[in-house]
Image 1 (cartoon, helix red, strand yellow):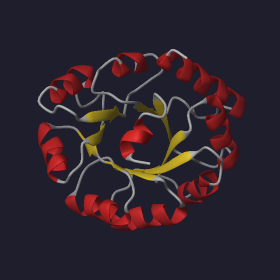
Image 2 (cartoon, one colour):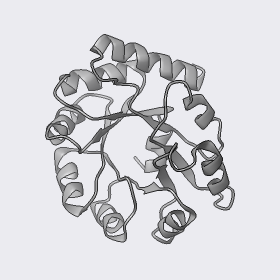
Image 3 (cartoon, one colour):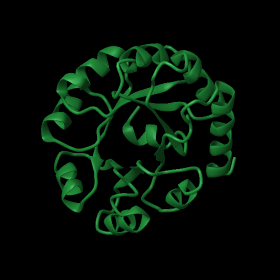
Image 4 (cartoon, one colour):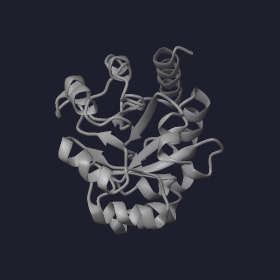
Length: 204
């Protein structure tokens, strides 16, 4: 799948920081069943790569690695079965590594210069990060004006309460959010939150 296709599967990409609280395969299956099959597992914990391996085997799950900072992490994520790569920023070396690996890549941007650098590298789909701290909805609207065709996945400060406002922006294809899997939530609670998000944000 292209990164564009991945971004349009569902309105929200759950962003997971896994600490062993859930069985990764069961968590992925619950999110798929609830209608949010695109899942970002951040490489912030020692459990992340093993979780990606387990989740990648769940039917219907589209599992990516987030917080990828360098080529070595990208290689590890690809070897673990990641289907796409997300980074908090954009470097030429990381973009080149993603291109060489032929894996969909969603780099983080926060400024016009970031976007122009991405366009020079052949990229036009970006994670707008940190979304709220970088200026919120007014900022992404302003940035989208001079860059026709660019689409964003805002991440950072997105909640169930403000996600709809972000998705109403034409240049926003989806949002990333950790609220889908709150700390301490049971699998049943996660599934309920995910189903509610899918229904309310897409009008299903």
